[in-house]
Length: 142
Image (cartoon, rainbow, N blue to C red; front, side, top):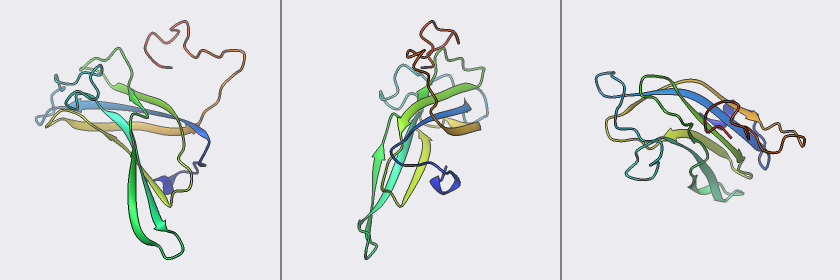
């Protein structure tokens, strides 16, 4: 996802939601994905924002990239035979010339099928500070 396709404002909180399936090279459900081991040998997808900035904005010289990882993850419970929800809440990076938002990190030869991705300003209520505190949605959505 390219930030030029959104009206996201740096410094504000946003909620990312997407539905995805993970398959093997033959299109069968991937059986080697483990959402409890995101960082252990890339066992489960995470959301990463690549932040592109100039070292000197006046001359637009020397573009560099900073990565902001673990901004969203697969919601549990996870089933290989169903669409998986990827969810996260994060503060949008400020002062960047462009951002790329990507889902990455999975075992080798796992393909992503992405559907229904959204990036919306976070809305919250002071009357309900613990979102999904009673596990109303029966998953690890927060």
